[in-house]
Image (tube, rainbow, N blue to C red; front, side, top):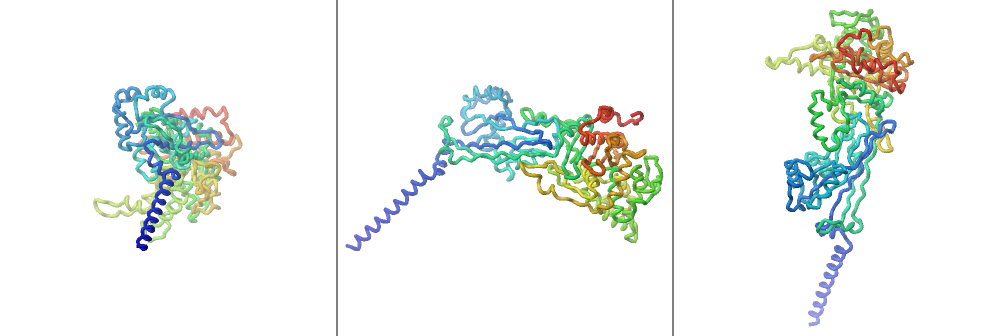
Length: 619
């Protein structure tokens, strides 16, 4: 009996201990640990995501380009909607009934318990009209957020734009933390630096009663987290130079890219025709976007990054450098202007050396330069020889940043094309006969004058001139010179050297100076010698099978201490010396002198309004 009595006390003790454990655990769960109360009270809690201030964007002189402005969104929580009169609500919001119904269906599809946007970018006046009647529509509420405000009418293609995140975006893991209705960078710098600009969201938990009236913070804000504002971007763009470039190309199609050779910083990035960045913000932005998209002049097309053209005669500089590196020509090498080989469009003296050839842009001279590169007698027949020579040529040309993406801090950059032997193998393969036709230098000679299959972008051409200005190296071109209080991304601080020895670049620069300031140079309309500014440049006329030829000019200045390298493309404008060259000269004058002399206004008018299809007689 004593044994049984003892077991009774043991069992009672066990039950007592278990009870104490349960009571302690319940006390912890219900009193000390608020997370369980939070889970139990979801029906009386409101979780509000605090969107941080998006980082601002400034130009190189700290002039604000992009700021934030408050706007309002009408949101809906489908589960809370009761006896909705959709017709009355559509009339209140002044939107088509079908659009409202479609938005409600999308909101339910996303979530019945989370808020989704119904109408965005409301102004204060719009909000006042809606708030007066919103109490009649349970489940609907307004939300304040910050939207982009563009302080400049320029630089739209580089800045890009911000828009409400779409369902397609939300399905991507990269955007898993975004909420419907939140803004996200869609294009340009707004997209490339999205994670930098967006900051970090915060969360607030608020108690609400069954009528949705706020009753204060949950547990005094114990579970709230603060948002962290995005970092600002400090661009290398000179806003005044950018505005001037867009003014010059207004009404034209083309591009201007200017780079600081010493840093790789992009000073101007003009895509013409352009549009104002503010057009793609606020109410009605969708309709304005479609109007731009359907415009036959394609103002949304980012020409400096995406338009690839044959570079024309500007490319002769690269071919000459490759030939010098391979030792197949010397600076003093002369070739006859033999027009039986290829037509030459200029009347000039015998090109006894590379400087005279560059000055006069002699096509037969550079035909023979590339022939010396490609046909070097490295194989027993001309076909295999061309295959070997072109492979060496392509490898060296690509070291200038051509035929590949440069890696600028923008998406949608095109590679361009520097054709390889395999490219021509494919081109000359006859599918019908299932037979490979052989090719030689005679099939690819157009590369010698920057024509044929070769294609480069405006950004790449400006970078080639920056590379020549630096005598053989470049930094990857970039827009952002500072993030927050720091510098640019590390990849924009690494030098890239070409396959051409740096000592050889000095041999092509005197000829480039003669292009601009020599007697009879093809680019003399760009000259700034009257201001003591020396310039090295090269004109180009790009053959266009679809219409009038395109014009191009590329240059850097001052020659001994380069501060700007520039490339100008103007579509359907003929000879580069009559249209692109004066445009480049005006841009360089604006940047180096801070102004354009009044007497130079006639050249402004010529670039903006001149008929380039006619001879320049009298200008």
